[in-house]
Image (cartoon, helix red, strand yellow):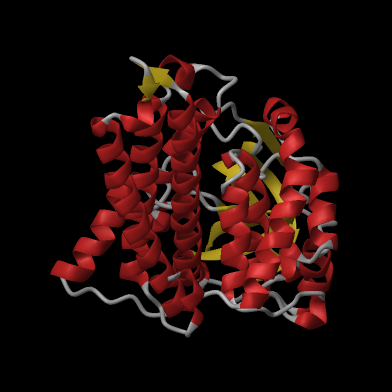
Length: 381
């Protein structure tokens, strides 16, 4: 079925990426998990190979490729068992650079998008605040126009790459409406505090503080007061990335469990021969494949110019909750070894948990679906 979406060119890209990850990334994941951050050199390497510009215009160093190359990038990175690495590396092109490609001025693209594609600058998206996440309209961060600057005050939290980012796209209220500002990390009044997390250890996640940060007026991204609509538009892609990554991680967890079940014996035979475990594998396999095909179908809709808000919310809900379920049950199949850090399932189990929270919780996804299905609410692109 995957051949319906992926061409020979796509699969060659997947193979080369997989080889790169096995050679240059996987051997160092434990080191980066402990350090709590992906090194700058890795970003530069990914930029050098063109991975950050897959969906960006060629005139800024991108490749202007279809959505499936980005899906493959996300899938393969999601399979190497480091949710933190995946979050950090994928958030840069899928969040920060997506906003720049869609809304930045020529000057802003030269300053941020071009070096971002090359991996010379790392970007972050700062929307969530200590007092709320998905309720974007209630954010408290403000910016007041003073001559040729905006005076920015407020705070953000749970920001991926927030501690290491060279620049951040910050959502703030200006004259009562939400706008987006480009903030450089060296601007006076800006500070960041790294947060300790249950999982995603290789991703630096931070709380950000803006105290009278004077942001030049030409650092406004897009139009003043249109930030809420920009955020809503990009939520579809963000949620599909989380859904797609959840499916890929589920597949990897199942494959590792199958290998272990063939090797582990109990009562004189491999545990893969016990019917109760075989049926559990069968059930999980069926749910993964059905969810995978649904996620792909929604990605196709987006690639063809549709705006599948309801379907993307469904995909994110189903795929991330399935990943949580799969990793929990796969850990159980490893028995006591599943709880040991030297085995892969402990990290998979921790990392999967965030999928149902980040990018909009499962509860928020259900409410969006309910509004569209029951109240006939429509979201316009």
